[in-house]
Image (tube, rainbow over all chains, first blue to last red; front, top):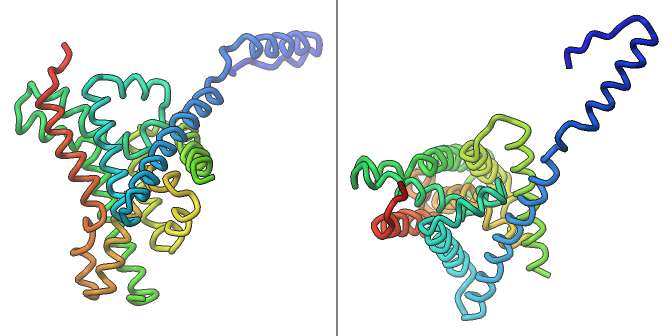
Length: 158
Length: 116
């Protein structure tokens, strides 16, 4: 980066050696490791979701109710782990793998609620709950309405 | 088999998200918003339901599913009520997850002593 290339072939040779040496000793990119950990974490949370879903199905509940109960159970567990301070630890390892599942959504609600409680029950806890969940709901709802209407315009109510 | 598919698909979405976080200046909040909108658009194109049928919890646990349930709620309600359903159906299917997050968030915040 920013190294002036010399026109002298010998100097240039030395520079190239230096560059390859420097590259060798640069800290190894953490990208692959981060992605692998995100894969394991995201996979594990989805696996837990599948286990819960099959459990509720096995109890004779229909597909829609089983899905909702699975989501509610994951939200409860994530809320509990967040209150105990453990979800942050999972997040430091799992990165996007722990942020993307619905447990990450629950974490984004519970974490500021706990943290800002001391600033008051209304403008502290309740308002801060939606720091991340707010934008998610806003863009989700706007997109849902736009997509729903576009679909109706294009293919009708079918 | 459904366990393996859920693990791999949920994992791949997590890894793809990590790639975005590491390669751009986007925050996890941006990532969640992008996934919700992506889930919504895929639902409009009729692609998310078959994806969920294939991947099970691998598709329904990531937050993109939130876009799916919001949009599916609108589409179903438009089917029954016409265009006015666009505002009536949004939270129909998404209600459980949002309510649980708010309710448990409130309870846990009440019960937890903040650190520091």
